[in-house]
Image (tube, rainbow, N blue to C red; front, side, top):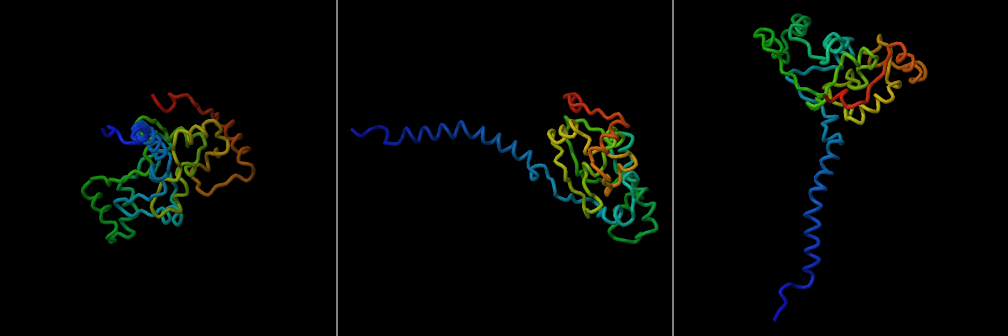
Length: 216
């Protein structure tokens, strides 16, 4: 009588069991790695917008400061985007016949705001306030990068919990005088930590690292 199971059946069974047990673990590990990878976070991928807004021209060439369009960063958790009428303050006279600016003119006429696509989007369970950071000497460039060199804005900082905690535990290398918060090209004249320690003392900077600082 022929054997019911062929030679090697035990080995095949062991392989199948190992795969069945290992796949969930491998899948979870893959998702965790993807979340920490620039590809998974969408970093270094310029976001298309309803209007081609080139920061290189507006910030780099024209010298428009961050706070002109994003003044909410100095007084609220959300930096915000400028209303259409602020755009038309210039573009009612400059490039006022450009086809590229037709969405801006249409928004100004019908009162419907432009729907800009977010570049930096934290999870819903994370609370972040721009106001506290910029008023404690954290520069715009620290998190947003050199937007004055970007034709279309992209995320350059990882914005992971580990990245944020690293700064909260030792903020001195990143702190700058309040007058230079929106200056994308500013560099301290000496040791960044010495400058940071002076700013930390002057502005009473004591970042918290307990969970309910960002999750509550």
